[in-house]
Length: 266
Image 1 (cartoon, rainbow, N blue to C red):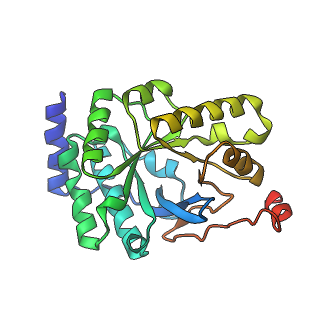
Image 2 (image 1 turned 90 degrees about the horizontal axis):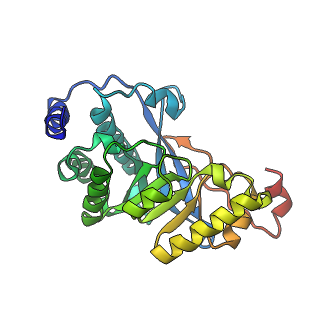
């Protein structure tokens, strides 16, 4: 089946409103700026109907329902975020998308834009993340998606950088606005000279290329302090807040002089 055939099939399924058959809800986790002590964005994370992890939900996605699932996730994320008042503040909404489920960016984005208009959510606050861990069938296609999204005013991000199939080769072809560093590189970095050297290199070339860097998976004050020391300001992880289903959890802001012992004990 060629891409034109798939396009017709995917868009037709969307128009027909075929039942998805996957029950899910959205959790939110903040991406925080430790310098300004503000939430930069909220990432929408898929969860099962009883709070099951993302793997439980994604394990039900297949070739037949991938397009409908991707569309449903976008709409559910926007609807829930709007209900929680996220559209009224400065923070953005970050949505993960499946590039292999996007056939024509300008066409497939219409359902997302309709949801934004219906709920009053500003489209300019949307970030679209693609994980480096997903094997991309057609890199030219992903490049076109990123170019189209940027032209439409969306922010683009590569998630889980350093844990997937492509690494630096991916960046040679796609230049996102945001680069999210995978937790496998940030975990216990304060005691790992190899990871320190890698992260210093990533932050240096990201700065020269104009990328914004987010450090994911932060679980301790020592990890955060080292990464802050090499110039990273945006963080995501359990140290600040765990994902909360249907809620925007209040981030924990450590005051590093008075609360340092308590922060280290987390």
